[in-house]
Amino acid sequence: MRTLVLLLAGLALAACGTARPDPTPAARAAWLEAQGLVALAVADGQITLYRGARADQVIPLGGAEVVALERLTRLPLALHRDLALRGQAVLRVEEVDALQAWRKRLATERAGLLTLPPPQRPRQEKLLTLCEETLDAALRAPAADPDRMAEQARRAWPLIEENLREIMALRLAQLHDRVRGIWAGLTPAERLYLRVIVTGPVTARRSHWAVQYFERVLDAVPDGPRLRYLPDPEEVGAALAAWLEDEAIATAFFGDPERLSEDVHAAAAAAWLDQVGPTLATGAPGLPSP
Image (cartoon, rainbow, N blue to C red; front, side, top):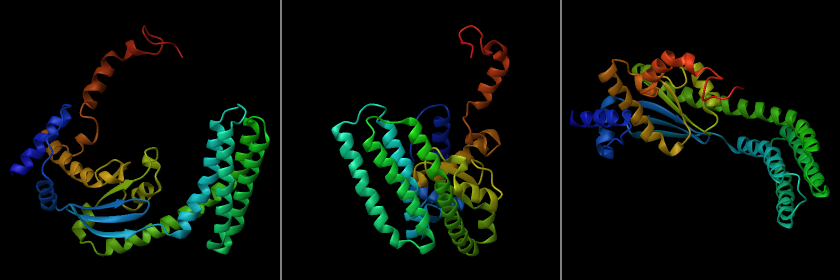
């Protein structure tokens, strides 16, 4: 009971903008065990089943083919970024050296195509050839040519799209296979209350491929009571704990376990904006017209 009081008090302080006192790891772990937490944490490289604060199973995801396709797919995007960053000025010596390093990188990737399944190789060879042509044109030109770069990007995009479809077919089929195996080992109650945290890039959020998968198979709303997205994979344990803590304090104070899944000030902000909204119209004093 004392642990729960500390957790609730800490969350109340956080809701008011004050740092919450952090319970000891042992106290938090004991509380999570008592809550019967069962959760999946999904990252690009693995899926972890948590029971309480304990990682009960860690199952790898990915594989050599997926990793190679991901890397090859990013190559033209990274090369385009590096060329765009130089602007339209004449290449400096250090920039020439950096582009020459790209030539070695592309040669290494071409040699590595033999590790891919034969059906994959022709498309990857075309992608590498386009990268090499883009690089050669950049080294020959006195300055960057945005129109030429855009045209080369358009030529690469259909190949990139094919790679993305192939990557997702491999990733999602593998994820589904892993989830089915985990699901078979859960009790009916654990299945009913299973939570999922997906980690990935900051910019992905709702559109992340694994979020879309769990949204479908669990009939779960992203950022809802069963499915969350977290940019930092190192914070999964703390995020799971905070998720349950927030539900406990929201239930105690508001009678709504989801109330603290949004900014605690949201309702008050909306009420104020509704009240004074007409005076904030675009073009009103203090705001420029579009």
